[in-house]
Image (cartoon, rainbow, N blue to C red; front, top):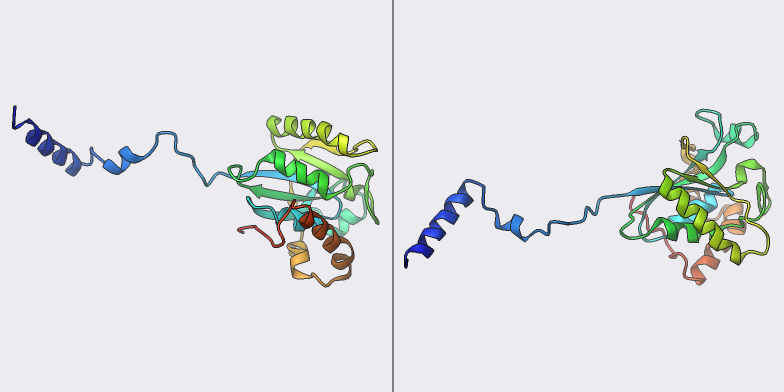
Length: 215
């Protein structure tokens, strides 16, 4: 009996050499979380330069891409969308880490980042391409968007007119539209429209002062 511990130790080293016993694996929790998981949200709230600048300043957002969705024309150009004949809206595709920021939190920021009560218009930007729209990718996003919309109505005097529709396809806008505010902070539209909006949201501690995106 006194040799049993020694025998057990010998068996352990045999198993370790064979790759069967792995102490490092024993130390790992069985329900470990994959931190590389990301999800995507698709919102339109007027000019995509504005929305991109807002959402890239949220911790947990990996990337924000400006583009078009909600219409019928395939591979539309910016010029085509501006003609109001494609049916598309200017939207942002937001890749985020749900372990750091939730879809519901993104929706909260969405309601604060634009006026969802003006039909086909945001400020001086007018037309269907500037409409307020949420494009959901699955039933879960649809239900969360509808619930969030109902809750947000209490913050507005006029009815929210935001569309909640399934995403058929997202089309990325031309390269010169990407990270537009960060690349052209002194441009007139950026100074008059985007900068004041960012400042307001920063003071309300809704967003950070600088982009938080990782890509």
